[in-house]
Length: 584
Ligand code: OXD
Ligand code: MN
Image (cartoon, rainbow, N blue to C red; front, side, top):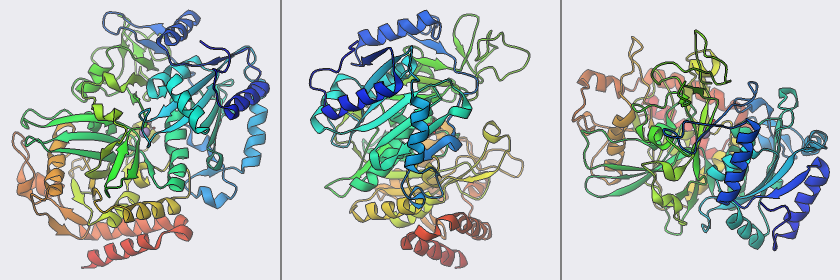
């Protein structure tokens, strides 16, 4: 571990680190190199302090249990601010604070906050180290837990610092856990300065600043300046039995199975298909010189939700976390193994380390695992390709008990932007306590777009103009139910049947059926080999109720009213065209 700035460190970075140290007054400064020795030393330090508990070394080697403060277990959207000079630039989709006010507030909180603590300087790279699509950052934090998580989630250390020194610029993120007091917790973004300040939380999305803060909020803003998109999307690669390879990106709001789809296991009745994971949460998309849209996963690991992850729901993920993993807020068995809802039996200790009582949940519903992507059995090595992967399809989806059919295809890119903007999901009990409340979550970016949604949609339309070979855009709904509340579609591995239909459309091997909302499968074109699914169920899954869609359009237009002053004319045109098609 290095306590002075490495030789060659860019003067602007050294100056910023010095300024922060003067403000926060740490006992010592450590410049992280990302080495294994450093990782071992920090891990040992957390074990010694009791913050890390080593897990069963036979079944979970090199894995640790960590519990957070009970009041610090999730992202806090109402305490997350976008600080643009003009309120309207942040848009109604963000909580806003004037930059000067935010800086004064944060200076007060950060003053002297690292006394008695170590300040870690973490240079990191989002994306493959040598990729022109990658961007760089430095996070300063007083949490060794954050350092160890950032080492898994990003390409962290010396390689990233060398690139920062050459280019002389990076996103800067300042973080302190403070006293973990929710009354003194703020996550501030200054998009114009590519700057983040986060105080009072040690939780992933609030504290691992490379993830949501940098790779989505700041990057979405940076992408608009530079001509690319930062999206809340998984990335997967699919090879058909004929040997055709395709890459697909997909955006879903939380609790819709993004990680499961990213790690999908083909069903036995579909031999010859292979599926690889490139990313499970974030994708950066950039038009290429060839007119296609190219994508990278800026992350190097997964910060996934543990509860519900089982051999049955996600075999790849379950195997992936059998070692080299940090578990946060899971329960523990008497054999010192991690436990969460969905697993057999009952744990000995709950997520706070207390003896497990009569009733669960024993793991926190937002308990997480942090693990390097390379441990995923379905890891796709293209994740390291500096060029990224060319996209054949973009999928949007949400959790809808009715209305949205299993799948439909947008008529073209511009219609696809409307399809993305109309993404909505019904909340689950785990999120709000109120089941079935519809939350509009355009492009699944509601909590993550760092600027006005109206400008963001305009940027999507503009990107489309640069694509001579755009990906096809689809919408899926795995969650449609019948009148008795039973799911109509089996989901999980069988979702490959829907992907197969998309691939056939992309390869122009089949026709589709035109409906007012878009292009849909002819029943015979959806592969049902090895699947028991009655014709009547398939008909229900593919039904388009024109009256219900007219109502949906009215609700959507109402949801867009707050953005009216910046609604792109193309969006107005798409809404009018949809209404005209529905009126037939
Ligand atoms: C996440 C989220 O943690 O979207 O990925 O909340
Ligand atoms: Mn996410």
